[in-house]
Length: 239
Length: 159
Image: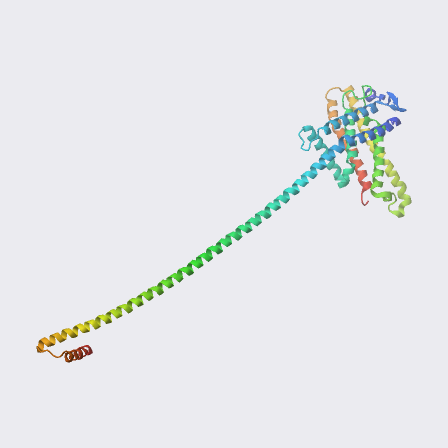
């Protein structure tokens, strides 16, 4: 058991917190360098795809990208209705970044090479994303409903003194649950995978790897769909 | 576990990422999809309009065709009626003509017959006179003879 634990510790290691260098007074860790790499990859890929966009798709690449985009659009329309359009870029950006981040942890060498660590396996990163969701939600709510957005904090009015703290707490808990769920799932999955790779190097890790491939997608879906639900609730006509 | 600098970096990174993605990815792809959807909708509407127009044209032509057919039927009917009328007129005229010819013929025959009878009567009178004179062998005066013969013939006709 101790061997397992130490293997796990060695696998993901605590070197995730090591400081590679400092930029603008902020420590840059492997998760951040990987985040940059992922973002750069997605942006370069997007750039390549959109440079060759044609009205009538001729390349499989364009067809595939359109298929993915429209599937996600349909998914979010299911939650947000026709308002989904305005929220699509943010939600799809979350999804793309998270799914690539999750999968980056499955590449052999993640967590071992210097400066290469799945960003979503770090709570700091997922918390950053969740906080963006939190503020976006408040922003969208106020934008759509004005001050009426705050009504749901004191509803029903005669219970306002009781509901206000509960409402605020509810809002503040959201980023916690959102970030912890994503981080814990990815971090946990990678730890298990790393431990298994060291203790049972044959066959067993493959099944866990397959599961992680599914979980990586599922966690990205959960994060973005919850974000969509938060946006939908904040901007809904009636509560 | 929670590294504050990572938290700050994540926010900065993602916001930059999002801003770039909007320009590099979402704007082009959403424009493309929107314009394609608009085009498809427009084409559908156009084809629907074209279909309606074709339908209307078809109806118009059908109507015209029906109208032409009924006109043709009318024309034929009128022509037939006129022909019929004309035929009847002709037949009537022919009958009239025939009647007239017959009448004239009858009149001519009657006149001819009368004339023939009259001539015959003359002839008989002369013959009778001749025969009588031969019988009596005596020449009666012309006038007396003639009167006698005529009386005789009248008597004969009277029987």
